[in-house]
Amino acid sequence: MSAKWEKKGTNDGELTFEISINKINEGLDAAFARVKKNLSVPGFRKGKVSRQVFNKMYGEASLYEDALNIVLPDVYEAAIDEAGIEPVDQPEISVEKMDPNEPWVLKAKVTVKPEVVLGEYKGLTVPKQNTEVTDADVDAELEKRREQQAELVLKEDGVSEKGDTVTIDYKGTVDGEAFDGGAAENHSIGIGSNTFIPGFEDQLIGHKAGDEFDVVVTFPEDYQAKELAGKEATFATTMHEVKTKELPELDDDFAKDIDEEVETLIELKAKTKEQLEKSKKEEAEAAVQNAAIDKAVANAEIKELPQAMIESEVHNQMDQYLGNMQRQGIDPKMYYQLTGTTEEDLHKQFENDADQRVRTDLVLNAIVKAEDIEPSQEEIDHEIDTLAADYNMEKDAVRQALTDDMLKHDIGIKKAIDIITDSAVQE
Image (cartoon, rainbow, N blue to C red; front, side, top):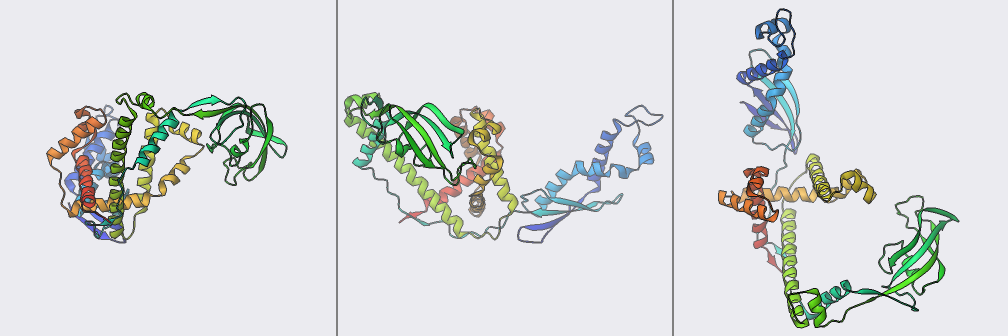
């Protein structure tokens, strides 16, 4: 094979390559085998016409297009390997020469991965992370757990306050006219939950069961129902019930109720502190890792990112996200209905940091190459064991789903991240 790569732009170029006569003949044979199955020629049974007769009647050139389509994928892959390039998009291929008994010559306009010039990625300084857990942190965590165990108790005569849960009827009107979704009966709402239009919940404060009153609010300018955006609405409201949270006592009984492994509040506090310390340590490690990686990426030079790579990253993220939804029984159509969004909205959501994700991936791969990281078979086997345990799968199923090259890539990226993170200095 003869392949020649000529760079034309920052990430674009032209690949010229040949298809050998032997490969052409393989393609022609395969193309003829396909065509003759359905070919009816007088004097021959269907599908039994000879190659010589076919060539005489139709000409061998009639097979060229099919033959090219058959051999092109393998030949193109071999050409990019020989040229040492990494395409990131489908090529635009044109035929330069297709003469009988001579190699065919093709040209491909190709967009390739951009060149990465690494900057400093070892010994980077990052913000120091605080992993200390104080008594106040433990108290705050236990207070959250008390809130989770709280019971709602009816206020017989008391008025509603922030934090209470009330049951109401409401009927909304704009300019005296009712609107869709503006009415409900026996609706439960936590005051301060911020689940209603801004200002609505605040006006529920100070009322008691049996009160009838108006709540007047203005819909936000960016409200999803465009016909209501920016308009003032009046909600005729009736309050039926007021309930307040009753928190359990912070004592030994509470400790045993929420954790069967402890007997006293002191034991619960000690265990909670250990859990918070572990959590803070993990958060600190993640923060150091993210900060160091971001700095390594910022230190690297990448002149221009191909739009094809950004689009590919966006679609990969969308597919992964919607795939997770489907595993929960929510197909894409249902997801868009439930969230009131569209495929375009989801695309925009993942567009936000796609550029940074692509840059990070390029830099990490460049570090793998610079550090000459080559995972061993033992490391590949260990990765398979880990994945099988994490996803509760058989090892053979993991091996079938992932090739060694895919596993080597993932292991290499992890090692590159370790090189950046382990050498980072917290200041």
